[in-house]
Amino acid sequence: MSRWSCLVIIKTFFVCLLVSQAAAQLTITPKETTLRIEESDGRVAREEALTPPAAARGSLRLDHTETLKVAFTVVTESGEAFRPQQAVVRLTSGETGAAAYFAAKRNKDGSLSTSITSAAVEKQLGSQGGLYEAVLLLGDTRTAAPLEWRLAQLTVLHSPLDDGSQPAGPPPRAMELLARPQPEITHLHRPPTRRVPAPVALAASAACVAPLGLLLFLLGRLGANLKGFPSGPAGLWSLLFQGGLAAILGLYVLFWLRLNLLQTLPVLAVLGVFTAGAGNRALSSLAQSRKKQS
Image (cartoon, rainbow, N blue to C red; front, side, top):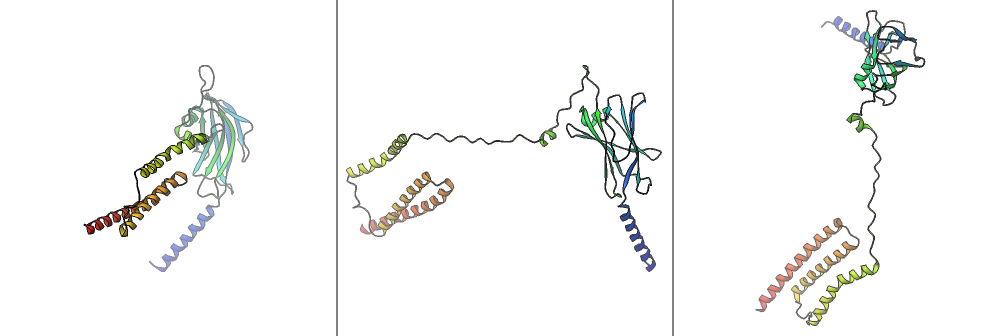
């Protein structure tokens, strides 16, 4: 590639860049905008010319026999005709917020227009009549910002029922029900159980302690004593084994009074291993001492 060709390519690139930057700053404006309500026989029931940002006076009425025609042209600041990439008339329900969209088509004379009927609204939103807001939306990548122009308030009337009344709106769809605010959840905690009277609680505690007292009483009557308690290493391991059992019983008492299960289980595991080991060593020491004596 020659040096001259490289210069041409670079120049073309910068020219395109400047043109795109200049085009991105365009400001567009609707012009010669008219709203026309036509009867089924072609007669014009109402026609109004609009200039941005003004909206139509009063509220327009569109029943099932009429057609709303919106016609307009789009120009730039310099007055040149402009064809936007998107030109849409949006009807938004004042009751539900649902919206129907009608794209504008280009006519032979260069203008843009769209026709709206109650049947077309019903095709998108169902039989939801009432007051709608008509808004013109213009968008293009070459403009500085999109345009949104409120055209008019429009009352849409669908085909009446046999009694002359308007049909009710369609039931909400599943997605609409999910998107709606849900009722507030109020948590109701179960009231605390009523405590028993103190005398009953004391009597139950005494009944629980009674077997232990009975055990001590019977051991005394049977002549139980510590004369047969082993001595030496076996005696030490026996004391440790008994101490482990006492610690486990004390842990049970603490679990009953203040500890929870997650706090109790680790300590119980340690005490259980210690007590089992001490008991095993105590039995081994006793067996060895008896073997020596024999």
